[in-house]
Each structure stands twice: as structure tokens, then as C-alpha cells.
Image 1 (tube, rainbow, N blue to C red):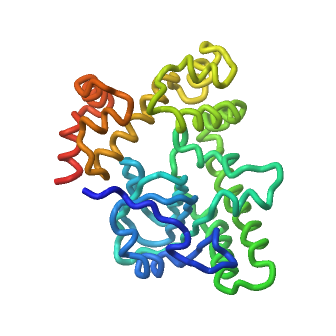
Image 2 (cartoon, rainbow, N blue to C red):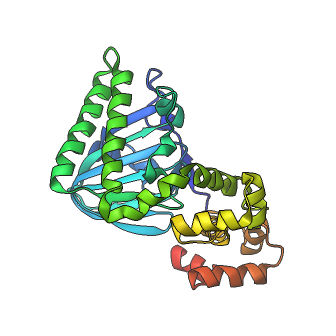
Image 3 (cartoon, one colour):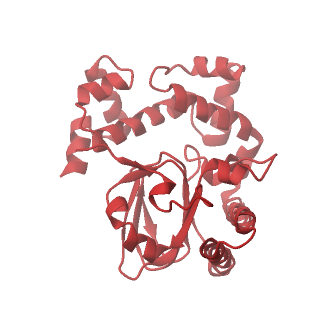
Length: 292
């Protein structure tokens, strides 16, 4: 099987004025770009899609979510996804680079929003009727600005983008999801830990190494991850390893032994036992499940 494709915004719209942003009616997007997006794929940009009609399933990094009116999905660069949608599907989708958002805010990062922490938070939520109406209006305004490309369209799009993210965050951080509020006090450490794991997980599996990089004790680091995520640092590292293993097994033609080696395990038998412990399947069984 060939490697999963990594798509860039320029493949959807090469307009120089908005090279770091794209927006479209979902039905038109699916019809126009079906060749690129039918198979599982990744992006090098942030993606947000709102569904207003129809049904289906959306698989993100091997987790399946139901799609219904009010479903909103927020994907980070690098997440693999694909979907199966009903013929009557409707909604709006937009992409943007990190730079497109952050260039307008000197003291704000795209990672300030809770849904762009896929390691600790889900990549979706479902809006209630009242919430859906308000957010849907903002999505439609972005689409209008994108299509008109009038004076100061970029400024207005970024402002609307920020409002959408704020509104979605408020739903995300409501009392029902109180555990997400608890994580905010540690967000800087968690984000840095997430980045360090992303950069080093293939060669570094020791929690103490990450504690050293963060300049905190291993006890403090484990307390931080346990109190916010209910997981140890070892779990976070291993989960990232297993996710990458799944991606390589499904989307890469490399042998299982080479995948084991690429992920830092010289002993394939050990890697296979670890994979089965976390997934209940051996690497070969997982491969057969997704390639049948």
C-alpha cells in the first residue's frame, strides 16, 4: 500500500492573496476534490469542518466518530482522516496555516484553544440547536468573505475565525467538560511536553528524559499528567508510538520489522507484544483488519 498523502492548501486553492487559507461549501468541496480526499490522507494545515445536514462517520487517527447536524471537527496538521458521508451531506469546511492565524495576534497562539490538543482532548464536539445557529452564521460569513475577496477580507476572515474558535471553546469548556478546564493551568507545560514527545518519541522513551528537557522533576511531571489527563508520562509516550505504528502499518508499504526498527525497537518480538498490549491485536492482525 502506498504512503498516505499529505495535502497542502495550494492543492485546493492556489490564489496568491489567500495562499494560507481555503474555505468552501462542503458539498462543492467533496465534488471538486474527491480524487484527493476519498482515500485516507493528512494535511500540513489546520482543518475545521461543520456539518449542518446529513450523516455518516469520520475516522481520525483510527478513532471513528458519528457525523450528524451540529458535528464540528477540528484537526491538527499531521492527523490522518477519512470519512463516509450520506448523499445529502451539507456543511462548510475551512483550512488555514498556523501563520495565517497567529500573524494577526501577538500574544495568542492557535494552540491556546483546547481542541487543538489531540493528545489530551477529542477532535470533535456536537453543537446544540442554538449553538449551531450562531456558529453556522459565522462559518457562512467566512465563506462569503472568502468568495468575494474584497478589501480587508483577510482581516475579517481572521476575526471571524477567532470568534468561531472562541465560541467552540466555550462549548468545549462548559461544566459538563469540567475536566478540560482543570487542564488550563498546566497548558504551557502540556503543550511543550506534547511537542517534545512529537519530536523525540522514536528515539526517546524515558519519562525522565522529558522531565529533564522541561527542567522539572519526574515526580512533578507525572503528577501534572496524572492530574490533567489521568495518564502517566509513559502512557503518553507509548500512545504516540502506537499511533505512529498504526499509521505506518496501514499507510506504508514498509515491512513490520522495519516499522519496529524505525520506531526505536530493535527487537520486533518485543514491539509486537507492546503493540498487542495496547491494541489487543498483533501488528499483522491490525494490518489485516485495515487492508482486507
